[in-house]
Length: 127
Image: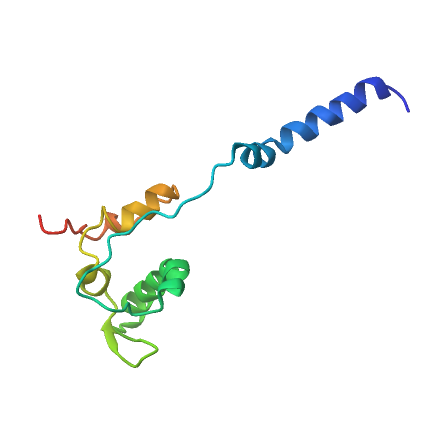
């Protein structure tokens, strides 16, 4: 092999650099901890199961937006048969009244910056 004395160290350095994020995270032992959310005290259930809502709320909100704006649908039927308004402000934020303690706690931790509040007015809890 031509120039093996240069290629092999170069490959080792390349593999070390490209895998650096993986082994750095393993060796640093930093674990992700989910933020503690301020849940509404007076509500017993969400419109969808909590696990599904955590994973799919962005899809649900986009779906609601499209159905509301494009198709004129205003009502969401939950799995238990209850009807809810397809409204971020009137349905979601009526229970989760403090954006900083609910939305921002997760979005900031995960470096996600949704554009919901560019159009909607952010609730400020009891202020």
